[in-house]
View: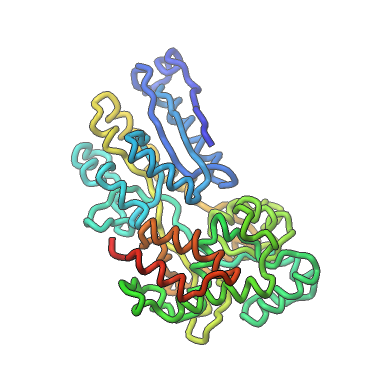
Length: 401
């Protein structure tokens, strides 16, 4: 989605107290605050407020976060067309290609000592430096439409047996058991299936060879095949997209969905008393029943292109520091949940020692896309074995960057 926000003329900017001199300066931004993201409106409001305060114009290019959006951001950097301020992934394989083109927070603080921009240890890159200001911690789990379980007299899926019982019953009743897109964003299903198939320490491994890949990683792919053959997904699961799959859940046409806190923000307010989130039930005896995926993986960057432009540097730094204000980060990073959805998320997050970082964040882009977009659907359909999948991935040396 492309949106250009031009709200203030130079005359009004000159009259507004504290405004910078209006010289027609335009700053470019990009983010994933778009589409169904509940913070999309808050982001636009912040950009408008910054324009009103400074007299600058913001041209924003934001789109919903998926692999195509990530690729477009990286392409803009490769083409020398990067924005001035960017909201993007940090401290993982996605951010690695950007580091030479963005400015470390310590360098900004040294040049502008009054700012005291935060350097979050959680976003430390492989070179030991922090480049992004953290916003929006995340978590992932199994979302459940409890009213559908009540309608058919089913127990909530707190165990694997109960989950499979529910899948079979919902399939009989014409309700999609688990809404998903295996062709678009199978990320959460893939990672969670591995998580519930082994001990937490196996999820934290970063194997260098095929022989080092934990058995639970093979078992997790087998589990996706099992779910597929049980009829857990819609018939078009390999052809639909994430937005359509998510709408099925919000429309109460699907009973469950494996997704993240950004998805929680898109649940209609009137449905939050009949929607909960919980850890996906353990499949293997060694799995932690409280385990879930979470962390901090995104933040705001200042690009070196803006930093080295004397006509734009001060304005770009001002915009970055504006985003870094506590109240603005809160507006973008908070989850506006109520009722059962709020209570269940708090219960899940109370097990802080059970939260694990997604290992796909540490994979190279090529290996991750091979796994998620090349293997998951094929394994689900039975066109590829889990062994063939991981052999293909490990040939790409996924964790050696």
